[in-house]
Image (cartoon, rainbow, N blue to C red; front, side):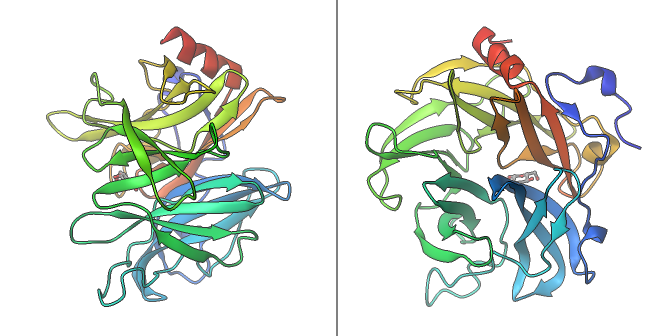
Length: 313
Ligand code: BMA
């Protein structure tokens, strides 16, 4: 039922098992839509942090983040209890964290840090939480003013400081640094919207260290006369100085083509909150949200992707 335009795939290839996760896969009938997911390897298994929009309220929220675990990367066991639920991050301000979505997760040393947007009338802020076991999370702090769409942490310090990429709500990618993951500064623009496919907004995912540079899968939005279209692409940052782009694709690597990407809660959306790279297997795996309704998988050759970044294809 998927992919009537498979001939047009480029670098990333869709799994024949797509969609991997749909609302009906969540036990208890509480899921209305399955959205985007953070992704990591933990104890040899693939762990997805899946944003789920609820039918009505569930645990006091309209959406929450659930853990789905897999040995083979396509069949998942879902925890019906959310890992990330509303936190009272601004005491005295009610209802500031109902919409718990878009998790970016990064392993730094032995801890997984989750950053997600918090609701606020002034626009989304960035909430930082941490876990070691994906059974419970500990809230750390709010790490940005509004409007900010989800900082993506680097997996290690760069020149002695933590680093992150994020997207002010208006839609460019910035880099900044911190001594402690909470206080951030030295802000610098990195990539601004350009061209057709990435002309309205661009936004990052957590950088992945490769021998050729920091690989960043990013999304871009094209606003045309009828609607918007969310595609994915990639760039490479200098390992020593990630404020320097050393390679960037001009084309998408995944754009809505399959039926479940073109038609859904929000039409014409492929959206990633992360990716998994394996240099030994020469593989890049991207678990992505399709039309804000399902989780799908696309995989490809890591070296082909890095090469395309370097050539600026
Ligand atoms: C973005 C995020 C994503 C969503 C996308 C398309 O701004 O909110 O969660 O997938 O829009 O609707």
